[in-house]
Image (cartoon, rainbow, N blue to C red; front, side, top):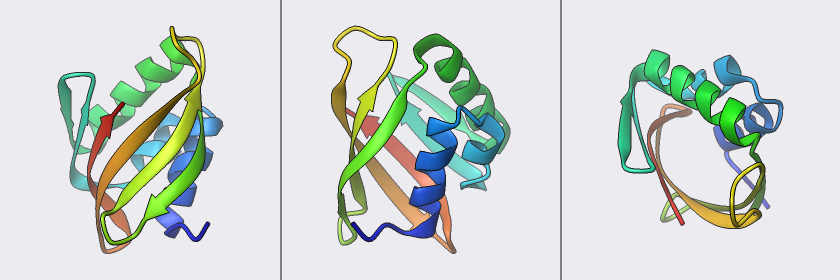
Length: 105
């Protein structure tokens, strides 16, 4: 699968539970929508993923990517009910960084 570098870096950061590296995949003004909440900017995104990593210890395995729709499908497993599940990562990329991310089931 041919993934943009930023998505490869995002998956690596997630699987290493590295919240700083994860946040660095996003622009300064990026927005993340997950579990009914909105996280704005790199600092909030880093705090969100740090808490999620502590709670769920989730790792992701990319299984499909549509460059035209900018949707990554990944199998996510961790410490949560229903694990593993396939999630869709709806991305907007600009200048090699993530501008927005919406995670859906």
